[in-house]
Image (cartoon, rainbow, N blue to C red; front, side):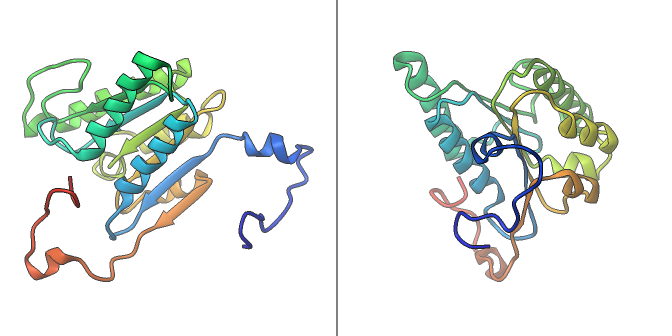
Length: 204
């Protein structure tokens, strides 16, 4: 594929400009590092275009704060103050979703994931966001916390012009099947293999 040039030109009756506005479902998967980082970078791009961004972290604890969350929330505040960029919401499970503030424990994760997905579904139906980052969402699908067929039909048939990026290892084949863009990040070498733990500025 040449730079910026598609492999084929579909016979769909659309102009190039119309085709550029078609919403996409993107999946970042594989055992390599950087799946979430790439998705959050995409969210920053979307903010710069004035898009409404919603981030939903499905596995990380609500107590775990990463650098991208701080940056995107600050950008959301900048939008509220100046109108620059677009609005940003960041929600994560663990001790309960941001909108519920419920107490939670490890045993509640399946329930929390189902609740989080139900809220994402409502927002998709309302066309609330332009971009949804469903971070580490492949795991609730793999573990049976959410219904795969429900996820696939909801994302495939979403109304309007809503973009979605899903991250996590071992993406379900049915999710890959309906995705427009799938990137598999391969693991060649990782510092944790030699016993070096995560560090600020790199992992958070």
